[in-house]
Image 1 (cartoon, helix red, strand yellow):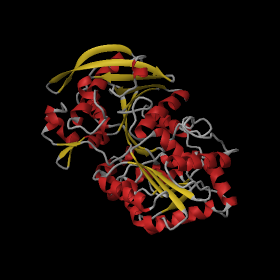
Image 2: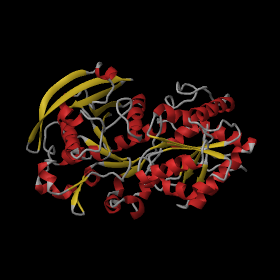
Image 3: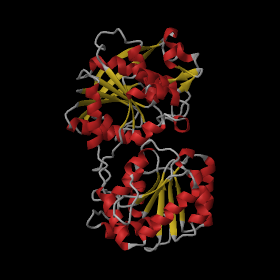
Image 4: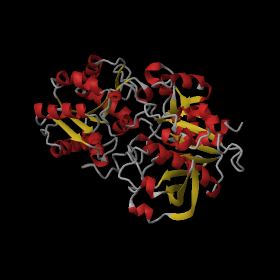
Length: 475
């Protein structure tokens, strides 16, 4: 089975969120399990020079995007046994950020068109085009429209994965032909509720639709979670599957992590976490106290992450014997709130605005409890990383949080975290208090940490499920 994965980011070349982690780890596991896999990415200016120096230029040509002819450079790099291809165009990708520009629609329609045109130039002939998120949503659309009668594309199947349905790629219908190069006779493919919706187009035209957890696959068929696409998803539910994301457990491993003050494993977790706890307290200006409980969050500060629940519960939460660490950035009103609370609770609260991979790992290792009260969470990786670092996840039972974290039961000793169900700050506070109770009980604390460390969040199972789905398309 030849699989070509197409995305807008992948570690170690580009990452802004979970998509980068997925496309960095899943291809390696698919290859281990027998598939031939390659990945195509944009060649961003921000890709590290050490990788650019190793790339080999395969081809240069022009692609036709609507009325425009645009340069395409195709480069290749073999990284950890996987072929990575890069689409080079400085006009579109020589920028400081990956997204957030006025011409993102044109940038990524160009990327999709270029990807389609380079298929005959690749070392393998793909059986499957596996696309992720709205930035690659035009791939299945183009295959069904522009390339439907093109030689060499006849037997290719498409898989489209929704990582977060909040981001859909919506544009004015007047751009259909001019920007996206879609003939008006095919307008119905992209037209949804009076505008172009790229994700809708991919849902309608792909051969198989997946999401990043089984629970999220069910949730997005309902109005509350579907963000306006619930009806089209219901229409296509026959081809919808949910496969839980994994993490690279070799990368997120406290025994090997170079960022940590002290490395540790299951046998040395108690001493290792104590040293990392003291180190993060010193680094972030908190009181150095081994007996206080550190509750942390590493998150974007946006509504669906449950930030309003934290705000409502904050002062009541701080009545407990805890310190609170938040690493993240986002909506201005949220940033202002946590900056004010940092002043209100000196040496007990730290708000670090921004993101640092190294600091995030130090926080995972040095914290005792990790809070994820998401309103919606397609999969989530932070709860998995926290568990692998021996930090108890506290999560709301939604999406991938529900599928990856099992509530700890003191009677059976089973469970790798603490959960709550309702979108309610009192329920969240109760979960935090239960987690503090477990932390203060040496027997149960040891059990839950061992359970968390033993959790299997590898890509082994997920990759096997994807391979089964790929093969189903050719039965």
